[in-house]
Image (spheres, rainbow, N blue to C red):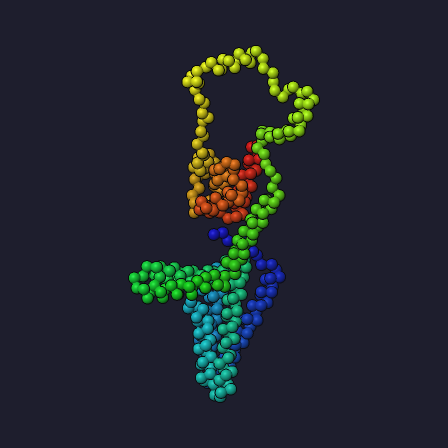
Amino acid sequence: MKHPPEKSLSWGQTLVLGATALPMVGFGGLGAWGTYSNITSVFHRSATALGVVAAGEGATLVLALTLVGLTMLGQSSPAAVRFGLWTLPAVASLTGAAVAPTGTESVVFAFTPMAMCVAAEGMGLLARRIVVYRTGVDTEAQRRNAAVMQRLAYHRARAANHPDEGARKDSELKSWKLAKKVGAGDALLGAHLVHVQRERMTAGADAALVGMFALPVTAPGTGVTAAPEPAAVEAASDEGVTGVTPAVTEEDTQVTAEFETVPAGAVTPVTPPVTPPVTLEEIAAVAGVATPQPGEPLTDEQLIVVLRHLRYSDDPPLSYRQAVTAFREGGFVGGEQRVRKAWGSLMSHEESEA
């Protein structure tokens, strides 16, 4: 699957994002300093306070930097990192609440470490959005969707083949619950779906306009002349026009007699030769490409080969809509935009040959 080209951050975006990240780091540091002050006021020993800060805010900072680094590298974060970003500040909050001398101070001591937790999550989310904007790839969403699809595949297989009927019913219900989570939160997937629907709507509108504005096409070299009106023939006869039926001469009579005296058995009937239809393999060989196979991705040249084969598989040749219908029914794979482009190339080639 092709990914969109990478985008670069403008100078203004870099400045705004940097200004946004600074308060996160600053308030996370203020939370650590607040925890240090709270513990010092209770134990009156800086070493103890530093240990609590290192175990809570310090460890959270390490996990936050790990999360940011993995995100900037385009990799998903392990579950232990995401779990620790919330567990360690929670432990620090419980510690502060436990050592606080009064109930009011326990509430303050409990809320202070959460500043580092929010700062870490904010930095991780900002780094993730920057990577998604620049590369168009959301590794975290892909990780979630991959996990959901793996579980869905397992339960579908279990629902179809497990010997226990209860297990089959249980997996059937879980499969429907997992189906609701497929693609959830994946903005890139939504953008792709919108793009696909836009292509289909464009193809439908194009087919409708072609049907409305297409002009009748006559094959080159076939001059079709309308038959004269009966009134014109009668007028020509009244005016003494004798060129309608050619005069029969003596020579013509002799030639006719010669043909009439030939025995019927001596005449060999002439049967026009039957040309076998050109196969897809033969067209592909002439084009110098591998034979297109249904269900497999096709190159642009193979698309043109398939459309040429389908167009001339009937007489008269198929139209665009008929060829596309036969293309889909044959199981061939190709996006609407690529099929339209290949059809345009085929029509341009036909016009140049004509």
